[in-house]
Image 1 (cartoon, rainbow, N blue to C red):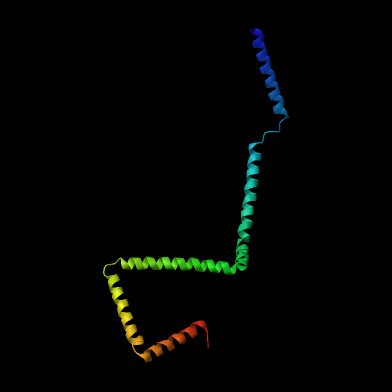
Image 2: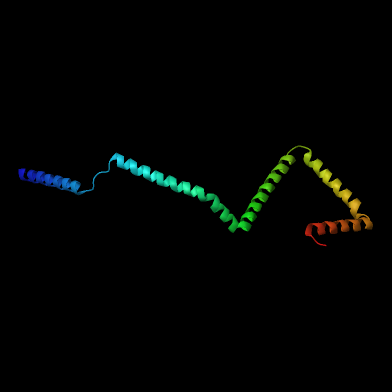
Length: 145
């Protein structure tokens, strides 16, 4: 038993010697000052990269806009239209929620439709006047002669 115990102790001592030799051959441990200076230099490098990116950002945005002008304007127009429609529908929904407002607006619409029919659709001369008015408006909008 004693020989086994001595063998284990000798094995343990040999292992410690190998570990000590491996530590001596390894690279030196980085000090706290070196680690701090490396962190500072990394932070400065990252800060410089961010600064350069932000400095070039307006030029990149302008270049992108010039290159993709039509799709950008189409997208912006689409977004503005959708937002305007949603706001308009929300306003109409709020107005319709007020008691007696919806029936009053319906009466106004029915009254205007009746007046329009009486004014422009009842007589032949007024229908001709309406067609001329529509043709004039169409030429103004479309730019015809």
